[in-house]
Length: 251
Ligand SMILES: Cc1cc2nc3c(=O)[nH]c(=O)nc-3n(C[C@H](O)[C@H](O)[C@H](O)COP(=O)(O)O)c2cc1C
Image (cartoon, rainbow, N blue to C red; front, side):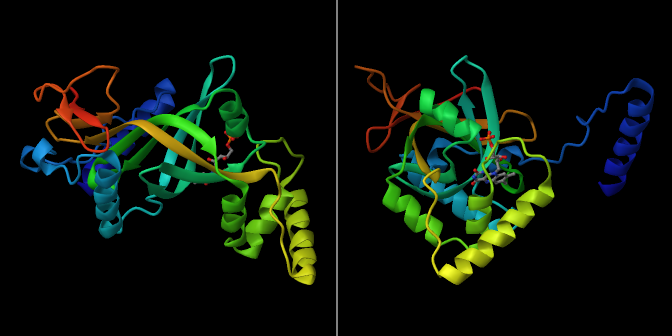
């Protein structure tokens, strides 16, 4: 397998030199086989948060994913242009998925004008991905303050030193500012939370669980809220718990 990957890399590098196009499609690892399918009977819960927890526990047990809480968060600008970046989901519950950021960043400005967001986890070690759609709400300031206070001093000083997403002249200026602030806060023995920093919760309206299959007939089971008056028929649409319904989607 290692030799094959090296060979493919060699081939793609050569193509790169001649065509200026790097093909990386051959660098695909073996996925789960069809005996390891994700079927309706395998659902750990009939609502998405219980199911999320079951998969999250499994990926943590696999110990091969450095940041299992990393999710790619997509927001949309007022003009309708999407943008995506990773954030760390710090907790989840039946209320939703929480993360922390700078309220003056690009993502926050976009969520201010359009709270509809999407987020995706990808756990290659388990051949799994989870897609979330919902709307983002700011967390109460007390909760953000508590989260800020639990961070190490260096992280707190970095938050104070940086205005996220603003162009800067050089990195050294940031480092100097962080050092000055660390010294100041050490002397004052207290680090207040800046009012431009805090958390969001994504309240989900749909959560899809995707698991790869080596035959490409990947499994997709989506939980969503039912449309007005929609009744599960037990074939295409199944009754879940806590007001959710779920359905299998074509890969
Ligand atoms: C794995 C990973 C985790 C990250 N976690 C966060 C986070 O929790 N909060 C955050 O504001 N930025 C986080 N970042 C940085 C963001 O991806 C991004 O650079 C930053 O939030 C600015 O995005 P924006 O300009 O679109 O608002 C993380 C990046 C990576 C790669």
